Image (tube, rainbow, N blue to C red; front, top):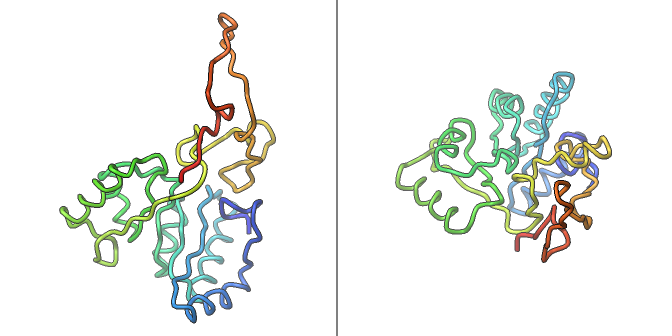
Length: 203
């Protein structure tokens, strides 16, 4: 439903679909993850818990989340959690912190390959493990927008259209052309790429 970062941009599973989806995944020999990575409000906590219970009953392998209410409730229910990219995990100390709660951390999109490799090496060298007792695993984004917001935590759509990117309802207004003008002296910024708010895609 509306509890993930693609709630407007994609067809979303309903709770009653989860059993079939998890079954298809098991038959194909792949894991099944449910993304619940939005910021959650008090009035949604009961709904979140029910979705997590449905996921657990359906045999979903893990939930991808960033809000601690979702992560802790998933763990209470015996459902593994993966830390979403929206947490902007960029260093080994943040990795160590999240290892208390999750077996998998999705690293910030802004990291260079060398930084990712260094974090992975430190996990091995320092024996950083998740709740399962196994070495913490990393996931990374290999394609997608690399914008001026840190790991997708953007408020442009909310400010302009009252639809929040952090609730999966982004209007992608960063992908438009903008002129950047210094209001002090009227100079216009010289930019090679016209999409100043969304300067490149990861590839």
